[in-house]
Image (tube, rainbow, N blue to C red; front, top):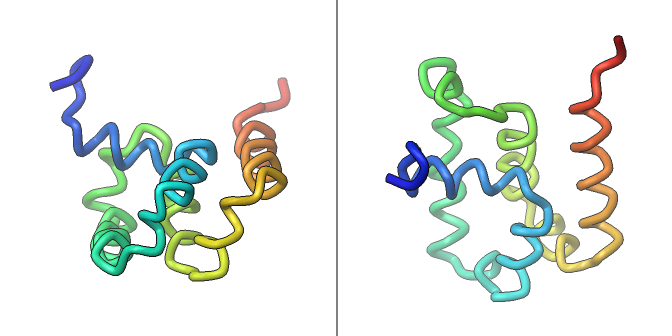
Length: 97
């Protein structure tokens, strides 16, 4: 346990962080067949009985969806793509009064 969360929970939620995705890409993990299979496996979190365990379901599931696309796994190496994704996540988290 890390701060009340399991390592698995922390790693899954980390997918909502574009800078973490960029790090994974720079380490060539997003090109690794086994890791890509693991990302496919994680799609079970889109089911209602599992999505309720996510603290940030919107960004986490969107990132998981994007990571299924080979083009995105290449594009996330680009600082521009990282910035666009970070801005989109930030914009969606700001709620008008």
